[in-house]
Image (cartoon, rainbow, N blue to C red; front, top):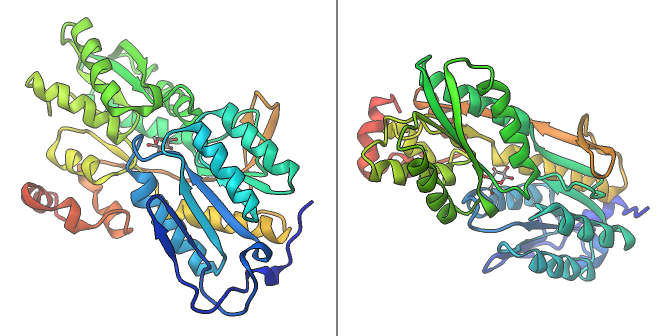
Length: 360
Ligand code: BGC
């Protein structure tokens, strides 16, 4: 048991935020004193910069804001897609005195090893966004990922509007438990829709957008172009699919799903080349992580009313599961008014008239 008194969050007045490359750390606001080691510092390791733009463009700033607002010292680094990197970063953070370590795992086995090592040194761990199967995280902070998949499946079915349709599934990384949950949620809706026939299904290793282009092109060719709708697990994969549909003169005629409400995803939704995306507020998720991390650092119980099943570890992991929102052309304002993206970015250049037409 690693208990840290609440005064550990007293921080150095005027201590600045250090930003270098893909690493940032800070001491939060507030007054008081004490070195980082005695302060119950919180470490976060993001997974990569390629599987989604969300990690660096949304999660990092939202986490920084949440930790600063709470006045807790923190350090955030990015593993750049390498599980070895993540393990090295975790060792460094533990040596540097973090008392709570949150990771977005790159695969469950490497995540579980990091958590086991952390626990052996009295460091509490949190699964951020992705559940580590067979891991030992004290708490899991995420969105309800099965619901994300259901929203995607329903979005696709709605866009197909009852027409007899051949659809293909382009799933996320097989090493990401979220991808499994998204796919299961989507299938739970699509499979019971009689007008829809699933004619192909593939996973995209590491959510790699370039590989997704090749995989989808092969699926398109194998189906002789007879594809009327595509389940794409996130906005990055949707972009890959749309590029092939464009090449074949079909973009805008074939509904494609997405997730993350990225600038590009929202622009595709406005342009009609993507039928929907899913908005998961980074501010909400980062805020929930900060709250859980602070409670763990203080040795207090975490308010985690949900449960997530880890069959590999044969346990139910206490969870904070937030509510995702489905976004189509008719409600892009939900993301903008929540500060999820800025109107200036989404409605720039050629997208300005589309924004006006959508009432933005
Ligand atoms: C996240 C998605 C993200 C994907 C690729 C998933 O685990 O929940 O938001 O698009 O990883 O990074």
